[in-house]
Length: 409
Image (cartoon, rainbow, N blue to C red; front, side, top):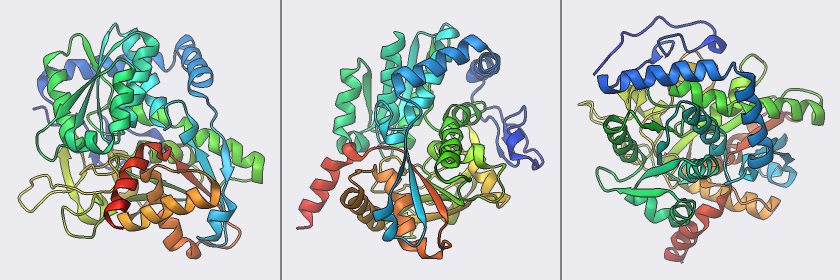
């Protein structure tokens, strides 16, 4: 395995990562030698294509005509009344084609892969949204698609499994370990090592070895870029607070990245508090984790005293990953973004309240950010403008929640 030494902490988050893939102390590339050439190829291709006008034009066209961007900005006054005395705007990534923000990155990486001559795509998925997005992008561009998914996640996200297969993807169950996202990533990496010449791995979050955290961030940054323009038109200013849930961290960094230069904006990432603070009962990396290496990158990781990766828990399949993107770890370290957690119970309450008050059924992932606002919103100054990333729609979670509530009646 290739391990690179940690780099000195950088001073400007907008200039990161450095050429070695580090965000201050976090990031880098910790991979088998087999993957080094593939990562170098992907890095070089991406850096070239993001400067290419034809590539940008094609991506922008697909995002507009196929994905449905820009997504709307919806004010949620009745839900905001439950939280505090501020104005709340929802960035509606749930209205993207496929129902979540994941399609932004899937389409971008699929275009890069096609231009690299890679005709076989592999992906991992937890909540299923990235798998659906990748299968959709592959169907659009005529690429073969294989998606790895833990058996636990397949059971609680049956609808998304069917959608992936309907779109022509092969969905491979993962029965090892906790049978969730961590284990799906393990299997996807094994596949990539074996088939690296013909295959591109579309990683779904700001995780993994360099250049993935940078690439996924860049493709998702359209969220915050749009939100800033929309808020200036609606309220004549930048937001006072921006908030998003954080699993691996792609929807959160998508909202935050273009806002980093605005020092007046308070940014809040919300992790899965699960059932409680005991290791194994949550997925709150910043309150319960420590620095470590997982899946090719150095970041905050939930692990025991022997360095073994901990089991995690969240009511949300998309938030139960034991690590977090290295850029998030850096931004927390330097104090630019604050990270809190929200329990299963509070997230479920927010799921119901937004549905009842605004006619919008949110994904359980996004409900964590809304739950934090319900519990802590009174501390936000009266009249503040708050923007929350509604990263996905909740259709996928309805069967799980219905079954859960039926058991408790």
